[in-house]
Image 1: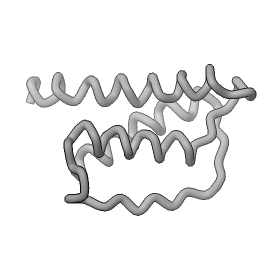
Image 2: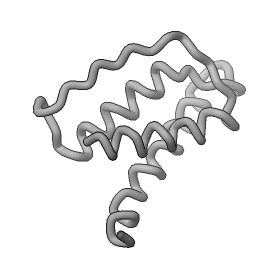
Image 3: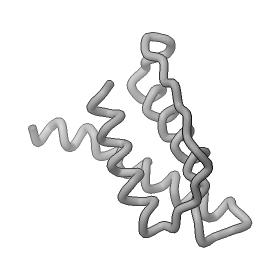
Image 4: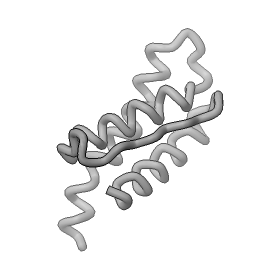
Length: 86
């Protein structure tokens, strides 16, 4: 169990770093464009698990802007849900 947690920690760290990267590259530094963030997170996880075309992700997200205080926990939850699904 501990080994699994250690193996998955880079994914958690990356999910948070994506949020900060979005902030720094955005004109609006107070909110995150969640559809773009989630699509990048899904693509990152697909690549990190070397899934290529074995699993298809159908990502449909309504426009949503969240502040960092809400985006980080949601990013971590999504990371866990997607990772567990994979």
